Image: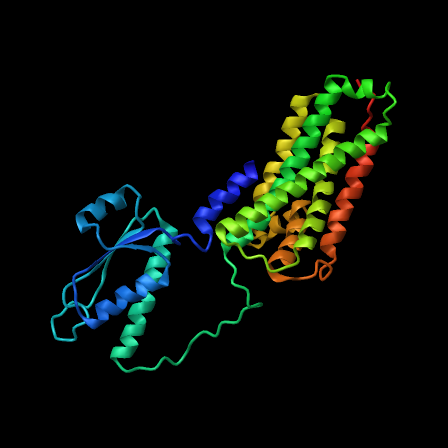
Length: 337
């Protein structure tokens, strides 16, 4: 439920249906064409939710309480070129809300610059030519949705396997199994397959909520998302078995599983690209088990890219699986006390 809860929360805040960066109270005291154009542009930008009904006095109180992102006041006769008419739009911001402030000021500066060019009949000499690597209409929620799939697989597999197997051993259930006709290999395979089925359900629920609940964009082959999701689940289960093999108690397994999963959740690219990290840290975390898995699934889901375009990701994942299986097979015994 934890990653599903995250999916809903991030969907409300960052999906295409969200109001962007909060609410801005707009007070337009001018009736000029310029002020009307500014009001129309701000509404159509959909960067902010625009509130035109709240009074300026009430808005200041709301801004102090952090309930709105800013106040924009257009003075009377703004846009009138007559001498003495006001030439500046007043904006009131909360210094603590840096991201919203930057977006609002950026919009205002862009509009005013364009207006100055038009009034002075000046054509800009330099500009920016934007080129996208693909034509997909992606947003931050699309990026996070794939990360939440990886987080769900990691948490359920590492913590689920390590804690369950440690509890079985601590309660001597594993030792009793060796005295029954049930083959140990059958027991292990059943544990793995049952958890893989749960992982398939997890992936399905997260995709359904993201795509149909919050209009996330998935452009790639959904079947490949499941295939590499299952590969990731096997990877994290092997880590879970390794933790269970080296931990002596259930409490120790819980602590080790948390110590492994939490840093990966925040460093391996679930919530933000790892290239935003310091270069020395990025060179380390890109080899964490979750990082290459997310690179492959994001490439499939968001860019329709083949996971084999960069085979180093598959090599890293398979290497982790092999290493974890060797350690767990060497250390893990059903008959351990």
